Length: 273
Image (cartoon, rainbow, N blue to C red):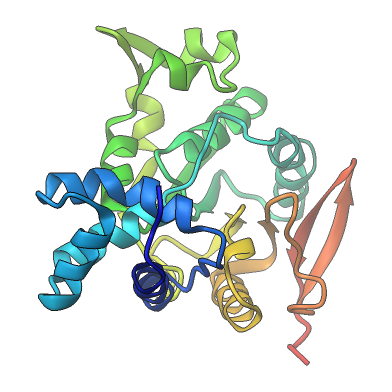
């Protein structure tokens, strides 16, 4: 597959304007593979033809489809493991020890099809069955949010990291799919949200999961997203990032806390330099 340079440039600019995600040269194959099904649905013979028509006659709904197609990322249950062990082994015990509370409020940003918020719930409830948990889960794509709300997953999706014991306790077989229990679904509110906009309702939060998102942003956008996250985290609350992400050298209002071989970030009262 080959993509015209002006096609890639137009799509990259559109995605950057709408989501702040940077599509660097070398991502042409990604753009073409993600947009080809959309182009065919629109009756175009190629991505170049589809984008030429979009440039000639801009349509907001089609712009949104393009951005959603290129900002939907891979996900799995208990992805990378460490954030969930840090949550149950360090963060939750500390938060409960510092202030009497029966409710843990969590924001799962860029939640995709829901595996992350449901994994958070399963992890916390396995270790603290009596704890009330309220999760605000957000994503830029309405398509993946619809799937997350339904809480139904194929066997292939289930096989990506879900322990058999959790499957037995928290899922029901529905035809060829598996459905998350109503109890877990009732603890999550899914809503569409762009990280460039004001934070979602539901805070202040004790914990914010903002994993594998900052890597797609430039430095200025990283700082702005971290500033917005800090504004809705309780004093002493925690931020969890992806394994390749950090606040160091970006925003000094966070304290890095080593937990085992991984790190989490605690909100401090320091002001940004």
